[in-house]
Length: 123
Image (cartoon, rainbow, N blue to C red; front, side, top):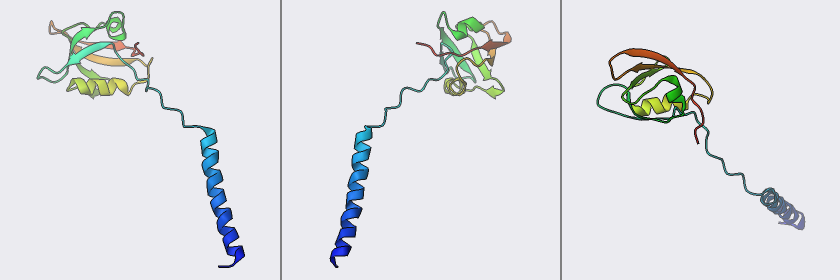
């Protein structure tokens, strides 16, 4: 290989080093913050039947404001059936905070009701 060939290799390596230096000067990429997802402010569990059983309601909170109470069984979010507590968490987390959602509930007294809740960001 002649002198011109080696010069090309040196320029190629210099370009790679400059690329690395430019990346280092830019600093590390910012760490992603926690994802902000909507919450109802309720604690739910599975109890062996379809739905998510409400075992706790934050007061004040979106669920309380909507009319949810301990002992309620959440059966649907919008048109999506809820079979487990995980189903409920998944559906609510897909909702943008501040967006109203319709909840189908069976109250502990046995009556059914449709409630409107506005999930928010709880701190």
